[in-house]
Length: 520
Image (cartoon, rainbow, N blue to C red; front, side, top):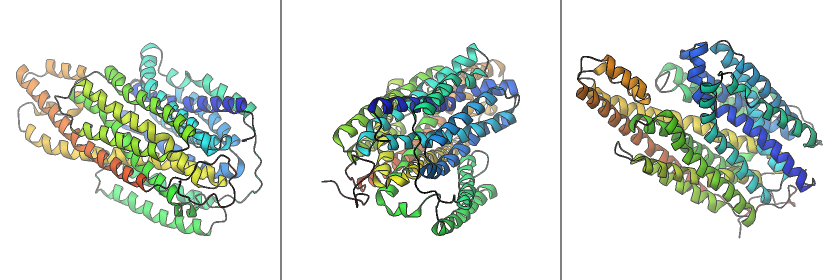
């Protein structure tokens, strides 16, 4: 597809980015809308599954479709993914109970995984490595924009229309993207058709799903040392061992194990895993600090969090352009991870006295670093492997980053809960102990309602209890952010060992160019 005219390539990329925006917005928009949805269809006890099932389905699909698209081409899978996502979005909006919504979200995750995996891989089909930087950066900007506007749009829609439109409002974007890709995305014929490694795919699924469930549930639904969590980890380890055995003997393995012998592939993916742990930790737990510790409303919190995503969009776009212009990329990852770690370290120093200006500064630092790093780690993997492994290598990169996010959020949450439980013991010996649930701090209206309904403590005592809980929550969050700092420093150290090989000017390298070479 390198031989296509530049105008046609740009048009195809616009269609791909429209599909990505369609999928990303549907993922980020639901967060602010879910409380209203649950209030209408019920199922408060199961609402976490609305997120968990999507993550599981998209992770599995992305890793499997990467290999299949290497064999059968990208076009069938990106079209199938968009079609499934459109149908699932329509059905999600028609859900009458939480169980239907969970099922349709699982279907939506299948489509989303196909879209994400094939979209990033399609960049590699359309452009040689030297030109991919700018497009990888723009794809990162799509994620950033979805994270900026999705939650705000979700809140606006449920306040203005019925919640169903959260799933339906972007359907025209999906239909337009489908039509454009159907018409303009060329069908690439594959010379070799090998048998599909169904056994490996099944065993890989049986390994990944329990692992992600363990990290999703640990510290929330079950204790880390519970039979369920330990059992999930043991099962995942056993099936992973079996998967490795199967792949060594498979004719056409789902994940060719020899790729991990390539140090660039391994270091990039491990760095992506660690970056995901730090990135998603900041995204998930900073709103707790802004709302719970500083007492700022959810709406204002969304605007404050925008500073992180907008700075990410800025550096992701600029960094991608500079990579394409200079042909160098390692320096951007080194600088980006260092800036991210600095922002996370400053987050660990935050207290109840921290100002909004300081919070915004910290978020901007994390966003700037994330934007510089985001385009690099996928590009390095694509540039280091033979083009016939483009799909599987790209999907592996996406999977490691998402898996890292799942692990990071769980581990930081466990640290936060441990510190909070220890600090709350002393408070619960005081009057008004029934008030001392830190979750109350997330909703100013609930605090006011409790103030009016509580008679056993004076107004001054009530304020003291609330202030003490804010301090406890601040200590707990500040104690969890150092974990993110150390993780990002670990990713930075790994990147120092990354071999920087020249970005190829063609998808068909000369003989021997697929080997690792140090740049001059």
